[in-house]
Image (cartoon, rainbow, N blue to C red):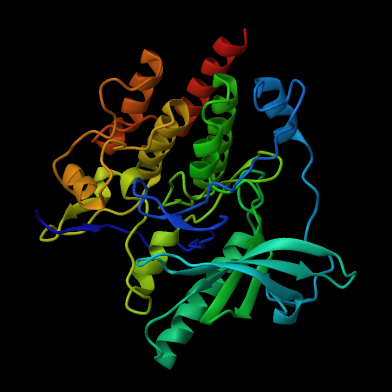
Length: 369
């Protein structure tokens, strides 16, 4: 089989964040996923119980106001971003990224000056090269990225508190609130059988809203998958990791060996034979392909290429143009058609974000009537 590689883009917004509980390697994902001890915040009894987890309950929980967090943290403001004092952070658990990842995620307790505590995630980016010049260049890129992210505010984007130092890295570490309900992958693993169709479309509307906001600000996510779509304690979707691929493309020699964990969600134009010229970059079109894969996952409960449990077989399928949707998928025929529209081989044949928003709205209306 020909060797394959990913095409990436240089985009000024390239942060990464992963919020998970105990990490295990899942043969169907080839990434870090959560352990079975993950438990969503669902009432045991009443209309909002897991047995009756309905549209109204999901909408009510996700629509609650989001409190302002991280106030009065012991920190220093540098330019447009915040540097959080290391002494304000206490490590609770370290979640090691498997080979090919960019670093570790630490669950920490952040203490502010009022002695209040909050769970946060600290992303530590490890390097394999101690060259001082390379380190300084990477620091500039990450801090420029941080400044860009600080200006972004949307309820479906992962909030960002600032940077800190240490945690085994020569580079700035990224601090964000801890997402109690983990990733969409782990969430669906537990909740797929109890989520109503309307609740699933609400999840998709959150993902689409966050992605639409990024695109409206000329920002490409570049690495969208169910693994960096996070769920907070109010069941609101938060997109993370937008622009992660550009970190690798810009400073690839500095980091430890890395492979894209989103292979199943990656648009075909971003994967090529080794001897082909890498002239394509991540775009709105490639993000929409990835969104189509997320739609498949949410509506059917199945990952793209779910029948392939080995990463080499997935690579081979991608190389041979195998469709990530197989016959017999348990979805409404109209949903399958729209997912396939998103997964069009030609990027310009894929729907726009406006068309995606319209499809989600019409589908939701037909369900709740």
